[in-house]
Image 1 (cartoon, rainbow, N blue to C red):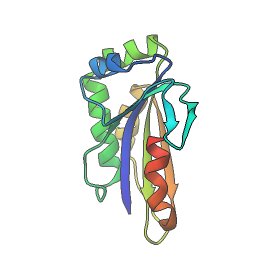
Image 2 (cartoon, rainbow, N blue to C red):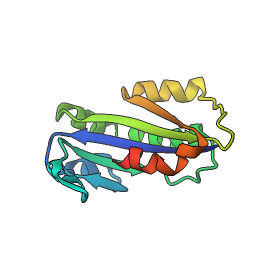
Image 3 (tube, rainbow, N blue to C red):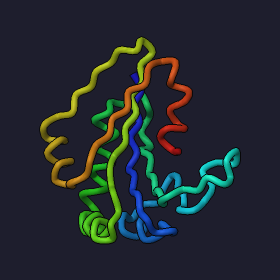
Image 4 (cartoon, rainbow, N blue to C red):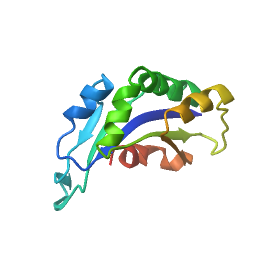
Length: 142
């Protein structure tokens, strides 16, 4: 089983520098409002800006460890999360779980779930069968 987790902030603002300032970490990826969605469809523009910070842990680590890494950022910058909410941003954690066999399981401890709930953000978990593994980065970063 392989896991990834990404902290995602979505805003209607055309720039995302204020998100970096609020969270105290640099994004791994950003997509700006009104920018083309892809080079193949330049007339299709993004409706919002997206700021993404991927967890740097190895994909072989448990999903719980990936989420905990992000929760630690959120806990250290609680006032920044509140400021983002006041600006109308949506903050969540998006996760990807893949398995060579197509079957996998994970445990999120009550302690981690309590810490996550205190952040008042959603957790999105996408499950990918083995053949979809190569397409998941498009889903997460698109």
